Image 1 (spheres, protein in one colour):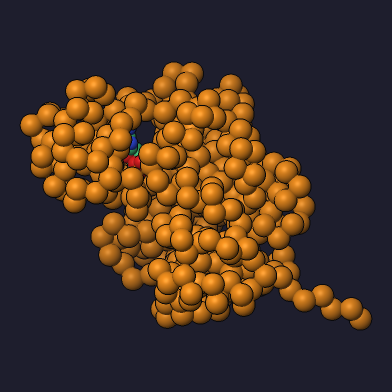
Image 2 (image 1 turned 180 degrees about the horizontal axis):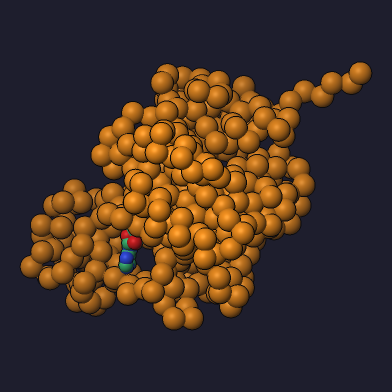
Length: 359
Ligand code: AMP
């Protein structure tokens, strides 16, 4: 009998995204090895190799031990990524890790964004507040996630305080968008250039952290527009793997907020809600396999932030999927999520309310 060697995918990072990639890898004949630290949560299901992700030599040695490398966070220094057999490619990751370059890139793709200006000094900030108008949000160009590295600005008098609060690092000032909804689109592009799209998802954030995702966000015109934007981004970047783009909805317009060059929290519902999860499709794409169907059922996802609800509470409901990442509880930390899939969108709304009451 011929036994083919399993492809070894190395994930830079060993948090919950790596954990769920490793879970999906099992049925694909792929093995996932994670670069992280002892005790990282992916260690519950996958091998975790101790690697300092800031150290280019350690990362290169890890990359040599696997067939290809992917990421679970875009906040890895661009220099560390150079020369790796990396999917998605380092250019895509580099663009996504800098809010200024990312917004300029969206505009080059013909995609609208909130008004923004580069801010490298307090004087820049004061000028930008005049030109963009207030209220606005000062965001660090790098290392921002879950609302971190952001300061709301309501008056020019607050500029000095805001500049100190972000630590005087390179930033953008972004005009505050009054949106009717926040949505995200997740897609996967394979090595042959084929693309599959999931339905748009509506996202609700609390304190800058994703709380609820509801799929689908039913709007045929916006779905088509989002897919057109996504295709343009994927093709310009020669992207391989799963990409998420977050948008603000303002009437019939989509304004891109940011993109994530990886599997994304607003796609966790696909584990139960879609024929192929985002995790399986990411591995399929980067390993050169055929992409799986994105056919899906209405599904709601609730993030568990700070702590998990008691098991007795969630076990009461048949059909409720509980994902506990096995992480220590801490305020503001995503420690797990709950998912419920149904036949119709109306039941999803009932479930959203029920889950929120539980949490
Ligand atoms: P971000 O880290 O850029 O995704 O921001 C976190 C959350 O803050 C977003 O999901 C929005 O809810 C809110 N937010 C960020 N930028 C803006 C903006 N320009 N206008 C209005 N709300 C925003």
